[in-house]
Amino acid sequence: MSFIIRRLSPATMDVAQKKAQQLIDDNAVMVFSKSYCQYSRNTKSILDSFGAQYKAYELDQESDGDDIQSALQNMTGQRTVPNIFIGKKHIGGNSDLENVKNNGKDGQSLEEMLRSVNAIKA
Ligand SMILES: N[C@@H](CCC(=O)N[C@@H](CS)C(=O)NCC(=O)O)C(=O)O
Image (cartoon, rainbow, N blue to C red; front, side, top):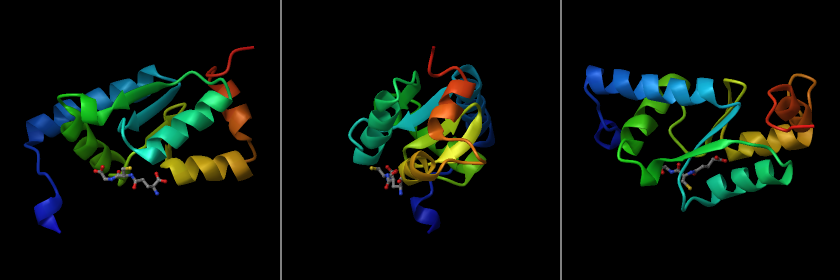
């Protein structure tokens, strides 16, 4: 297993985790994505269907994308994309977002969650 885990130096991991956390803190809805990934595309379509504003960071198109992916794995235990945060809370991947869309979470619908963080205006 270890051969597929890309090991970062502690300093690089620190920089990557700070950057990932900043993106999570600065954006009501944060999607770490890969542009070619069908699951990521589906997540963005769901958010678009609610008219929600979100920030997508396309890991395959950013020079630090691999580092950020490793940082996210460290922070959330999830390596796959999409890796979704709403209101700084980790939602999970596309299947988790689908689940929130279909069943809600903690008594809130997805639309209510998106409104509560001002990702849907008016
Ligand atoms: N069950 C996951 C599947 C996500 C998934 O398999 N994503 C692929 C890309 S399409 C992935 O992250 N592969 C590993 C990688 O790109 O490093 C979800 O619903 O989000």
